[in-house]
Length: 121
Image (cartoon, rainbow, N blue to C red; front, top):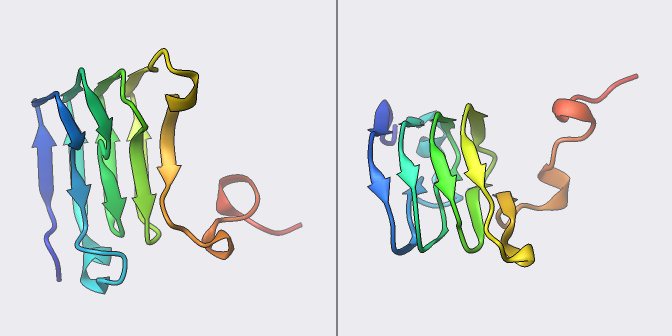
């Protein structure tokens, strides 16, 4: 099993391009059991992306403050479960950089269909 049971809390992040990467790579299956909580952080000025970027696992992003990112705030690939609750997002002024979440390198066939990923009649 990869790393699990991790909490990142009460931190201030500023002046970084790639802030936080969770997961070894898209093909590393042991990271599927990873559990990470990111809580009560401030993602501040001059940040570009990966607040966090998640590969596999279960990531709980709760009660954080995101301000003025340059590309996207939260990204995911390799089918992670990202539970984002109670966060505050202040979008940047740049119209092309207002993306809060991003699916990174995901085949269209891997996307859930229907509302909430459910299918049926």
